[in-house]
Length: 54
Image 1 (spheres, helix red, strand yellow):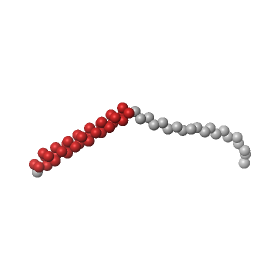
Image 2: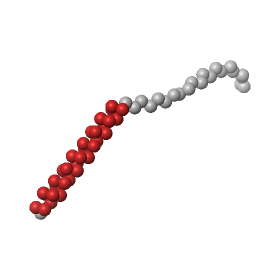
Image 3: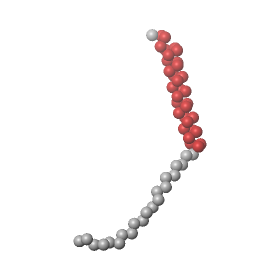
Image 4: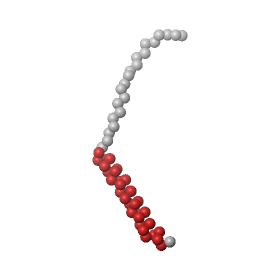
């Protein structure tokens, strides 16, 4: 049962390439910065004008 087999093993290098498109990164940053600014303005409006009514 113990046979000697000739097995060919192919070794491959796995190369991970990180692709970062600077234009896409900048647009994503601008989008989330706009979300934060809008959220801040809404909270400011609620605190400044709506909350004192109660």
